[in-house]
Image 1 (tube, one colour):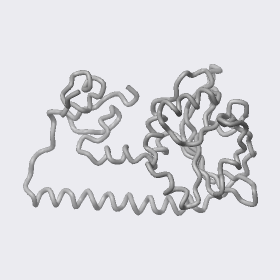
Image 2 (cartoon, rainbow, N blue to C red; image 1 turned 180 degrees about the horizontal axis):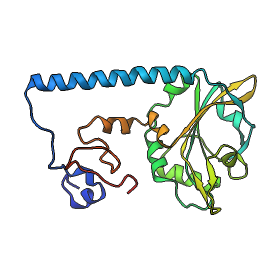
Image 3 (spheres, rainbow, N blue to C red; image 1 turned 60 degrees about the vertical axis):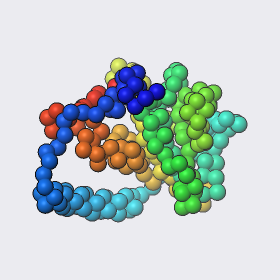
Image 4 (spheres, helix red, strand yellow; image 1 turned 90 degrees about the vertical axis):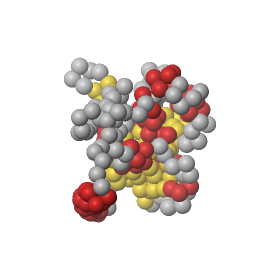
Length: 235
């Protein structure tokens, strides 16, 4: 398959280079514009530092030691910590009656570090939790080649207790993606932070890489110049 293969481009339209491009300026004009942008980004960095400082001052809440279902049998929430005292859980959208995992959540798992030992070296364990039965999770995990521990909350109230599955006014259930951060203290699991929706972007490196290209993510919600390519966000 060549770089210009029509089927490949149809499946991944962002591979087709856009006609639109920024104006060309001399080096001095570019350096001046870049310096202004760097100043704005430094303020964002400083603001993020202030927000992170407040995050470290959040209280925590005790969490039930749920019994999930793993590939080899029951797994307690405290078991997910392994030998560590910190735990990051990715709550992957995968409803009990779904036959496949959420595409966006799947993309997010694919964004995880290639070397997860960088987390464990800092005392952070990692696991995935979804509401679908364990056999569906295992099939999806193997299909995608993921090495991560994945457990099912299917027979627990976990997804409802913490809002990962919600019921609307019409009685229809819907799921949210996101991350839960836990601390194990004296054998008791505590929730210290959780985030969903666009809060998940903080640990998605591919999204941040795309943000810094001239065309951004090429999604329809972005404020981009006229003529910039934009596609449906969940298309």
